[in-house]
Length: 258
Image 1 (tube, rainbow, N blue to C red):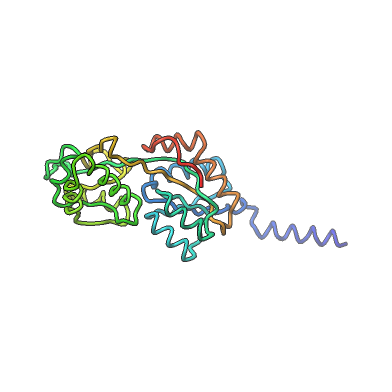
Image 2: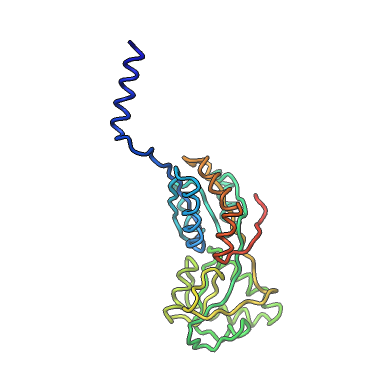
């Protein structure tokens, strides 16, 4: 009798669900804005490999995402453009750790008509309106590191002249890029992967000046989907994931896990 009631209850529950597909798990991925296109493609490939998981990405500056997580935002994975914000969340007990999965490098971009006539990195002091990231943005921090390195070759006056021409400090590299594309800035220092061919001119940084940006990713300690988070992190580091990152212009290799 009891088994018959259980069977009847099960049939009612199945009928109530309409016989449809089981509800997909949600995986919330907070990622640096420079990862936007790469992670959108990565999400599509991941969902094909794991059709029971629905990836919901959120893109912003690494420092903005870190603050949102510290203030209680619901996230399962955090992907940062530098070690600093990963370390802060690990110290706060909010992130289980950071695993390196990609790299990037800096370039200077100028408008197509190049009003400041910047042909090389050494010409950067010619810019009257330079855009870089704020000191709290990884790209802004890397830009300042590159200028300090350049000062060893070109002198302290070079660094001072470039920083003196900064007209705007942005909270992510996409905003910096947009100001050059719109022609309201003479130049900007951004990641190589942020360049949209045909919209701007690209000025490379010398190898001994450039700074490698290492991207790290980890699962939040309070994630509601720990298995999905680990699957995503492993997928990004897999040959399929690394192929997507490479096609999107990211550097191979990774920073050591912390």
